[in-house]
Structure formats: structure tokens, C-alpha cells
Amino acid sequence: QTVVTQEPSVSVSPGGSVTLTCALTSGSVSSSHYPSWYQQTPGQPPRTLIYRTTTRSSGVPDRFSGSIVGNKAALTITGAQAEDESDYYCVLYMDSGSGIPVFGGGTKVTVL
Amino acid sequence: QLQLRESGPGLVKPSETLSLTCTVSGGSIVGSAFRWDWIRQPPGKGLEWIGSIYYSGATSYNPSLKRPVGISVDTSKSQFSLSLISVTAADTAVYFCARRNYYGPVIDFWGQGVLVTVSS
Picture 1 (cartoon, each protein chain N blue to C red):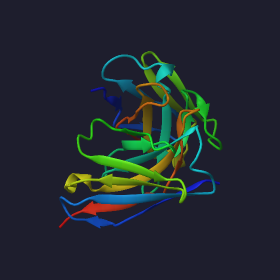
Picture 2 (picture 1 turned 180 degrees about the vertical axis):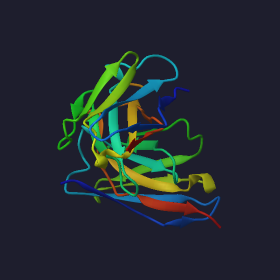
Picture 3 (picture 1 turned 120 degrees about the vertical axis):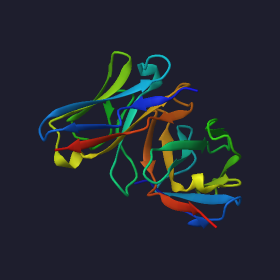
């Protein structure tokens, strides 16, 4: 069974940059997995940030960017702000875009 | 603006069936580009995709769940529903319904979520 892994937690200073990654326990992540990223604050549903590896969802600030780095998908926050302190989840599609979405375990981002 | 709203009992007894309905408004549930998802989140834990349905009734389920799950759709009411049979305390979670756009692919609209507690 393929598992999607993320760092459990990371911290970043206000104004700093941080990169979150999304990996597979077996194999490399590529654009064919259509990586997407979601931000969630407590008590709220997730908010869509990035899809199709690099496309920002409507209204998402350009300090959020997506990419493939090595064999992982990545979400970079450049110029972190206090309101970016949230949980972040990646999703990979194992069997083309109509297939099964698999969530990563999530990364808690602390801005301090 | 598309809106999704989950409804159903907030408390279910162990071994009973958890049933939830998602009502879609502000847009059509019929469309070749969309899949309609159920996703859950146990308290303090991460998100888990349960399954999805297409407006035609075609379904996909998470093979990791290893339990009977049913998702159905009623296009005349713009609703889709989840049934989780023989629940245990491990099924306690916030359940979200969501729209997934095939042309992302991206889960682009989410309901607010409903907490379902499994307890006697």
C-alpha cells in the first residue's frame, strides 16, 4: 500500500521561507501524480492552495508556490506571515486525475 | 458560489450505520468534470478520503478502509449520501463532503464538516 508522507512539523520566522515536502514511500513523485496542497486552520475545512503541481487556486497569495524538488512535491512559503500558521496537507493521485486521491499526513507550520 | 452542506446525526451507536447527506447548492451536481467526495478527519488527526460518486452513480472507494461503505446520489435533490456500516469508535470524525474537479484535478469546494461521534 502506497503511503504519502509529509514532515510532521516545521517552523519558520516571520518573513522567512520554508519548504514543505510530499513524498511516496515507494517511488518518486512526479507531475503525473497531480500534486495539490491544502491549508487548514482549526475548526475550518481545508482551503485549496495549489493544484496540478504549480497552479495557485483563486485568491491564493503568490507567496505560496508549488514545485517538484528531486523526487518529492514541494510547497514553499516565501515571506511567511503569522496567518500562515496552519496545517498543510498534500494530495497525490495514484491513478490519473480520475483516480483515488491519497492524503499525506499533514505538516504543522509554526510561525515564530 | 457553490455551497455544500453536510447533514445527519451527530451521535451514532457502535455497530450501527452512520448516514450522512450532502446538499449541493449554487451549482449543478450534474457535470462530467466533477466527482463528489466524502472525506473524514478524526479529532486531532489528518484527512482521509473515503470515496466518491459521479452524477451517473459510478463510485470509487478507498481500499484502505476495509469496511462496507456506500455512496449514493440523488440528482433531483442535488444531494449525495454516505453510509458507513457497523461503525466503531474509530469512525468518530469530522466528515466533509467536497467537490473534486477532474480538470485539476483539485478538490475545489468543501462543506463545513459535521462531527459524528460513535458512542453508546
